[in-house]
Length: 158
Image (cartoon, rainbow, N blue to C red; front, side, top):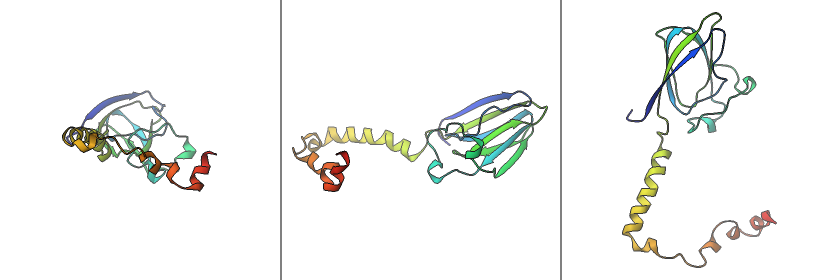
């Protein structure tokens, strides 16, 4: 994918759960190595949480609805979860679990590229275009923001 990747190992004792329900800011490939683990995957809570740039806080069970997938992973099984997939996992009764999560696509969005490119492009333009180094007109701020929005908007701060 020509982006950063990571790999974490998770060892979970029998009859326990590692994390509360949440979503991550990475695409995750979960490879089960030992034991068994029950994974529950949920639909997005809202469109605004899809393709997040940052991981979520932990959710309460009542905040996530019903799972769209429940699967017990056994050694050799692989589960893919796109960035923003709400999920939780717990060991099946009496079994421990060891899995690795291979992660990719963290901070690999158009927004991330533009955040890097715009400052560099602006810096180059300023160096090459003298007009960008001129002072703005003295009344520029009169045409921006709440002051230029009219009487109704300026009353908000009153």
